[in-house]
Amino acid sequence: MSRKSGVLLHVSALPNKYGIGSFGIECYEFIDFLVGAKQKIWEILPLCQTVFGDSPYSSCCSYSFNPYFISLEILERNGLLTKEELKRSEDDAPYIDYGKLYFTRYDLLRAAFSRFDKKNAGFRAFVRRGKFKSYALFMALKKKFNNIGFYDWPSEYKYRDRAALRDFAARESEELLFWQFLQYEAESQWRMVKGYAKANGVKIIGDLPLYVAYDSVDVWENPRIFKLDENLTPKKVAGVPPDYFSKTGQLWGNPVYNYDELAKDGFKWWVNRFVSALKNYDYVRIDHFRGFDRYYEIDYGRPDALIGEWVKVPSEKLFDSIHKRVSRKRIIAEDLGIIDDGVRDLLAKVGYPGMRILSFAFNGEEDNTYLPEKLEKNSVCYTGTHDNDTLIGLLDHFDKWDYENMVRGVAASLKKFGLSRSLKTKKALARAVIELGYASKADTFIIPLADAAYLGGEYRMNTPGREIANWTVKMPGSAFSTRVRDRLAKLTVKYKR
Image 1 (cartoon, rainbow, N blue to C red):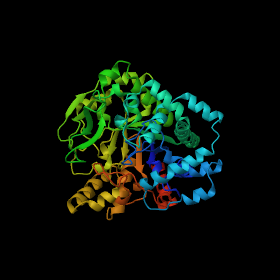
Image 2 (tube, rainbow, N blue to C red):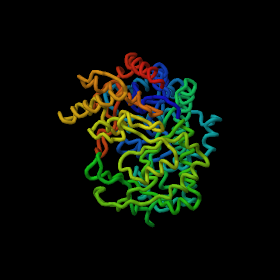
Image 3 (cartoon, rainbow, N blue to C red):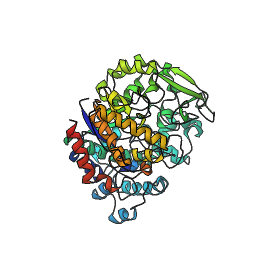
Image 4 (tube, helix red, strand yellow):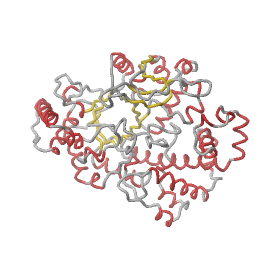
């Protein structure tokens, strides 16, 4: 990747009158903001449909689009909603209310579907493509069985008996078309956004979670590639051992992969997943890349991740298969957490740029690999990710020792870059960290919009290990001001990004 910079902001956090960001005008306005700020990258989180917990990293279908991202205003312009319905859907709450969305948005989308021309040629071709056939079946069955997990459905549906599914699809054809309609609208709107970004010289980095949710189309459709027993109950689940994010580790609960089965057809499922993701994005960031070298599995039913086992992945064969279909130049590795020689060796073999987080850099250790002066060219530098506090939030929570330690570390790095900046205030300190990211040798520098706008910890997207109050952030209008835009543009020009 050539020297460039960009902004991290998920679609959900874009300003919108209807409770959550969408693929509507706010995307186009944000792309215009990026162009004005001379940014070449827009990084987002997974676009898939969220479920209980609201995390884009836990979806009922890893390759779906989130129906909440369908622009209501576009539906209204196309005659599928009324202005009165839009008015009733307005929501100016400071945070996203997913519970409210669940109980109101689908009724609105069903109203739009009732007015949609189901004989539309584009829609008919979309359905014939078959990509979302299993998704539509899954969602219709979820509705029929009051949203219980697929593993508790009657056996003919749980184990995907062909005759039973065919009969169900015939009886519930309208319901299946509704779920196809949601994906058709969302995909069509996203393709327009992506096209606008391309026309304006903005590339999109998307996110590919390592794991999929247990109660998902992915597991229901492909049980053989996961470590499940004969009842389709997980034998092992995913997580990570204790680290700087959590003292008891993180128990994610996702079923882990059966790589012996995956290898039998040349890892076709993984290859198709990469190919599909790169139709939606220009680059893809592999979340939890270390899980492709070795992954941490925990016995199903354990209360935490303290006790588990590391399992080796046939990574060389896996990535050989992936690279036959996908350019390695379009992939970024999230190499954070517990990184050992195996992960470093794998990253060197595949050649992907890794991630360097400046929020982790200034802890007083001179050999800290995240220090801006130590960053290698083939890397992506961030002030922080969606899992970190904002720079201002971090400084707000520091005790005196940590704060002064960061001041000393930032001052030392500035000196090595031949820069002299005031560090007397939190905002000045955050500004200096941002400039060091721009100045670094890293080919790509990404700044979360909350950091670019000097926002506090109330605009943190996610706190790992916390079960509530995540993913609900809405960016304030001030974050998109000309002041923020021009400040980014000035640094971009100065450091030739």
